[in-house]
Amino acid sequence: MNAPTPNPIKENLDLPIVQMGDDTILVHKIFKVVNCVIVAGAIAFFAYFLLASDRYVSTATIQVHNTDQVASSGLDFSALRGASSTGVTIPDQLLLKEHLLSLDMLKKLDDSLDLRSHFSSSDNDIASRMWFKDASLEWFFRHFLSRVSVDYDEFTGVLRISSEAYTPEMAKALTAGLVREGERYMNEMSHELAREQVHFLETQVEAAQAQVKRAREELIAFQNSKGLSSAAATADGMRKLIAKLEEQRAQLQTRLASLPANLDKGHATRKSLVQSLQAVQKQIDAEQKKLASTSGDALNSLMSEETRLSEEVAMKQDVYKNALICLEKGRMDAARTLKLVAVLQSPSHPEYAWHPRRIYGITVTFLLTLVALGIANMLKAIILDHVD
Image 1 (spheres, rainbow, N blue to C red):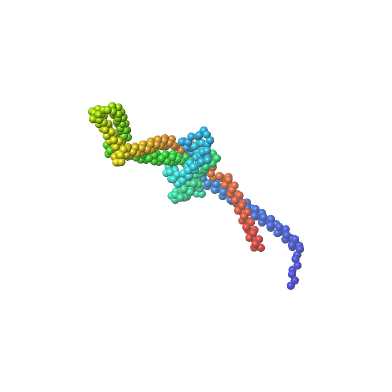
Image 2 (image 1 turned 135 degrees about the vertical axis):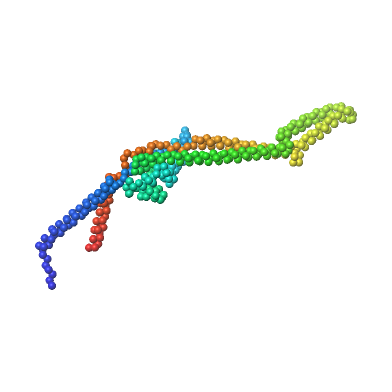
């Protein structure tokens, strides 16, 4: 069989019809995109302007100062250890930030402001509110973090607190509660540390006082056991007595030597001087034996032991005095130690609902719709190309 011959007239007539069909499809696609954008815009408009609840934002700016730090007149190296001459320290700022965003802070604010009821109220839109009032603590805490932010500015060293709520009054109360509880926490923490330091110093003073008392009791017990009020004073008196006896002995020896050589040895004068000299020498020997001997009761041994005990008492007294000085200084430091939370901007009372950002949301919805349609058409064209 012969193949049918093509009809050029028919082909010429079909070409414009095909071109007109392509234009129709293009116009149809444009209308479809426009319809999708219009529908998406209508839905976004309905959601943002009719359904979405207003959320008000209250802000505050605070800074933590150490009131016990004084700026020095010389070079300031405090910045090298995370502090400034004004008493602002980075660790204090970051510590306060962590506490403001903690679970303990949420519990305190919920007790005073009943945040569960406010965040889960059915008067608010379902997209932004907490769905269940009796939600778990973990979900409640997550929702709290989505409504409260605390940012630390490294350049100025301040904390910026921002709180969202469905009413201006609740937004301001939430921010004010954060500032108030933060100040209370910092003061309580610094005072607790100061109290611990003072308690430690008081313990050291009591221990030093007990050691002084015990050392004195040992010294008195030793003196009482030896029957001496003071071994050093007794030894000093004995030395003076021996010195007088030696002086007296020298005088007797001089008088004895000055007697005439032809004087009879049995003469009363010579005999009296010899007896006196012997008596003085005997007393000197006795006193020296008391002062120093090999026995344990010698006065020099007693004096050495008493000196050791006295020195121990003196050392314990010095330790006790230093402990008292440290205690007084610690009490003064504790009295003036205070973390001052300076409120640079008090919690604001919002008059305009910054959230939701309606114009921004609708614009983003339009753009995302166009992007989604473009991706869908591109995928469709790729699929059809592979099918052909």
